Image (cartoon, rainbow, N blue to C red; front, side, top):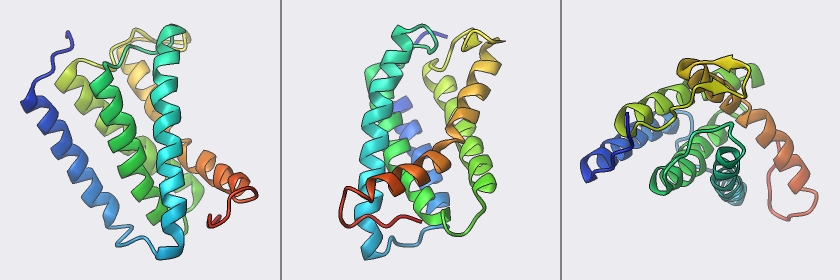
Length: 168
């Protein structure tokens, strides 16, 4: 399906992000003041890094092109906002393995929605190993399940150099 952007499709995606944000908020009914800086650093770090990496991975041939608006919404609103909210809420409440499954499931839902709305996440392989578009979407969703351990260790590392971060 070719990429088609309309105001209605963008609004539909934002409604889905909003619904997932409400689900994420059930785990995080308000970020405590000491953790707000940590949440901000996590969100901005992931958003900027993934925005750039999505393009570089496309150029390397292992990812489909995410048009700029979709890439921006996916990285800054979804990853930087919603997934960060979810992470702050679950990082002390769930085992790391449970967090990874939760993040992979959330990611799969959103990738399927973006694929249906915009025709994105359309590639014929996942790192040349697993063939087919389903393998590509599932592979990237499972990779997104690594968000919790990468964030856990990233915050621990950054806390050595940045004041005000709350590592777990």
